Length: 346
Image (cartoon, rainbow, N blue to C red; front, side, top):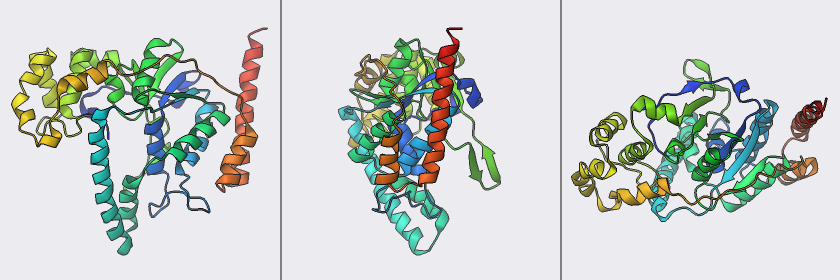
């Protein structure tokens, strides 16, 4: 779900080639959910192995990441740790949404409505421990660094982006990264390069959002941006304040400026919400300002072809030919990296 401030945020389309040589911290859960919801068959059924275990996430991780590595990027996947207690509201809301989608999916299935089946099936995805552990296993076997965050992966990625010179940007579809202080946010990184629409195919390019440019454009600071997000609705208060959209929230923030005054001005509206949707803005503000994060060193291991084959082909029935073709690409990538390393000495 996440924060939606797309209408008021300046962004810039970039070519994938502009990220060559850059190190990106990827919000792992965000990307895994993206793969689970988008990599599906015509009727919306996720990819599965012979034992009916979902493999859409492994397919996305393997094929899309080989493509990104081929473009010369270095990737660090940051996984969520323990969620803050406040996030229970979003988990509850997602559970209700899944239940609703399940009913609509069954109706569409009975009427053989493939379009609706695909639409609703994407909302039924869940990420379990086995999926998470196998994802880490596969990434490490591909030579991609994995970081286990103590708290939210998104806040950890933003923190590493802030403190480490070698990190170019965070990669996530969610705007919460900006509230956590990520200097640069790259979106659409792992999406398919072309998307089918009613009028045909459209090209999807990565977009970059720079926090400093956002604040300058909106004429607010980071504290005020956090307040704006809380007014609209974050993962910690998913409903936000009904009737206050992105533009109205910006007006309120610019008018009252100080967090205390901003939320004093909407106190009556917060209190008029159903009890389960009411929120304490200070608690949410603190989660964005002082998230649980740690400094870590990145470990980029060697590509373990045998491990990749064991996970994908032996465990999950992936096509041996297709996997081997991607492994050939990985080998070429590593050879190029070695050559670049040798070139520095001449």
